[in-house]
Image 1 (cartoon, rainbow, N blue to C red):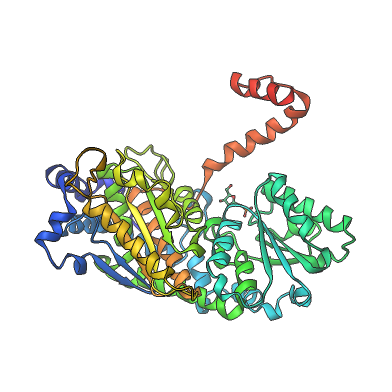
Image 2: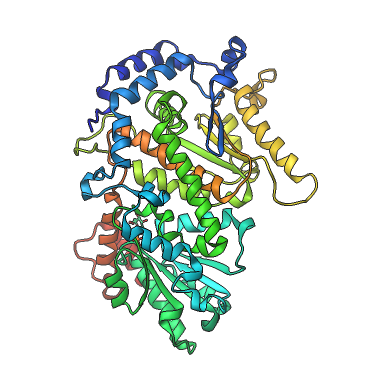
Length: 509
Ligand code: F6P
């Protein structure tokens, strides 16, 4: 695998020149006027997802240069290395092999065993109690929370087992304390989800849940507590004997496909979970085999780099027009910003260009009545990614056409603008957006949508020459919190900066 950082390729200089000469003046409305076939040229079919890219500031020449950039940077061989199980996460000396979890025939024997165990819930270790169980509480944070929570909500219409799923992530005791009064120990299962089984928030919440369980007369920990972890020994030491394992080659934010997906498997059943994996696998195959010019994750990743590094756009807004996708923005925040929020390349050299954009958003149509004002008329251009679903799974008259009309209208308004009124009523238009369309929100299409997002993040990270699979930036705060916690009791502020010392004193007063 030979990787060349994007700014060290011939295509980079050509793209800079293209931006200077035409790219910065590109007007999507003119592009449509000149090319009636633009919608076809700049749209892309992929498994379960249709993407309209035509409202973006891109033409065929730029697209060609971006594809050259991908080839010259070695994105294809980097991708192939990931799929082949190379240690592409070099700073942690780990494979990045979550794609294997979606492709059971290729999986190693121990995966096949564990997958059979957790996917086939009826045979799973928690099964003995599941019948009598009404509430399943997932205690985990980051990748051990955002993925399963997002997916359980998204696939609510496919819930087969009738269990109430709860998610507790924050170390703020208000979260767990608010749930406990509504639970009964004999009908609750706690899933302690932590890849490392060391994360302080999760360990603290797990310990409190265990205490509560005992205080309420709960006795059978083996039946009411299960651990989803790579660190089975630590789970055992904590007193949990029912464990669902996975491996260090599954990154935290890529772990939804592993035992961390158990809440989803419980909610939608084994067959639904298999469909979810199959949808993701279909997208993997698309990413692995489609030519770059018709490869959707590649096209999205290239666009991300074009906007971030040439246009200088610093954020991207995600607008899912489906209330079941309301946690998608939070999930994608971790995926994008923990993966690509890096200031050095894979060899540790400081980067001379920007990397991860700020990702943010809310479900439509709520965002329209909050921050879309800024998207339409603010001073910054923010590319928007709309996600819409053709089919509704409710029967309330009129709602779905209205929802779809709104998502189309927002994308249209951003691009077309309105020039015939001046001043406050002027809409500049030419504001870029991408439109992702699913026929239906199903386990398979959700799997494909998530895999698409994983791979587009891979593509931009690959171009930027960074390691998208470590997260050293979260460590310092963890270490400092450990130092500060005893100071809250002792009041010792020696060695602290003036602000932290001042706040500590105020908190103790
Ligand atoms: O602190 C960041 C992080 O390591 C994430 O990458 C991860 O998803 C999260 O914490 C939770 O980690 P764990 O599953 O090991 O508890």
